[in-house]
Image (tube, rainbow over all chains, first blue to last red; front, side, top):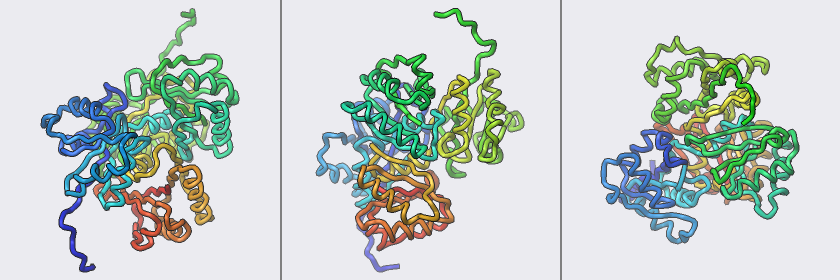
Length: 239
Length: 239
């Protein structure tokens, strides 16, 4: 033991609180995560409107107006992060929520988590829906080794698809990527055009909603029955 | 519409049912997933003993003896998969459970999911705990691009650590890996020895349990205060 003087205030914790992927999928949030949300007062969220809608759907024990909600999105200047973390440094537990799913994965929340580690604030992740993980589970592809590539290049889509197909083959490593829904058609057309007939391609759509669908087929099979996704939110896997 | 004759029997669905990561973390399983488990009769599981223990903890509406539980593990011959899927092909809904966490990711269950796709059985993933995802969320590292590497090479650990550090730097891609708990000490010692002082290293331990701890520091900081993990289950991240 050292003779260090204790800090005057003990830090609060930073809770990573999941929210539903789809509007009607509140049942995918475990009750213990909802309990944390109900207990907290200070929240940092990707989009306040979405979070208020979610809180209302959980039947909260206090009025929404009692929550102190700050936004953290791609426009937030780095200098603002210290202010956002301040409640935790002052001893309050703080929650962070994404627009959909688990915070800290493919959203701006990761920057606040990074700062929390640097400031010695304890970080507590809570279980919830992740479209990346659900798609991987349901794909039947290799989960011992996988990559999440984020978005592929819109300008060099064919090259990017062929590049990750090679990674999938060479390393036996499942390749996961996303696209904005209005580019679903372009992605599927290019994939069916440039990937090898024997390559497995998985399309996971509307995860956790009533319209959920996950299908893995070879490119040759997909070519016989191509899928018209429209603008449904989708995750794609090659493996 | 075509004049195809409908199959005599409509297939059941294959539900991917999560279970807790730690013995006492039943609250991390959403109620809707427990409801599916209670409704089903046919289960394929990585380890029957663990699954029975979990079912008992959920206060099931029927005796455990009414469940028809088959094991699928790393010793199961490929030829056996058809038998395991048969209940679904005969019209029964079928559940698959892993030893811990989400089935289909880094466990033998993925092979049954693969076969389900080939046989036209609908695959339904349910939300639950994943140590990989929880560690990534809580690390504060880049979640826009990440790799799960599985186990690193025990024989060439130093080389493997340096190789994935280079991938992390070159592609700004978070590198996630696991180890068996009895090798925690070797992994941490090697990481602190061979990685660059400025590289960020995250250690996530005992996720979802009361002893949960996630810490991200630079290698230089870890060297000042190395962590003695003992044999606690851990996930490691470089990014």
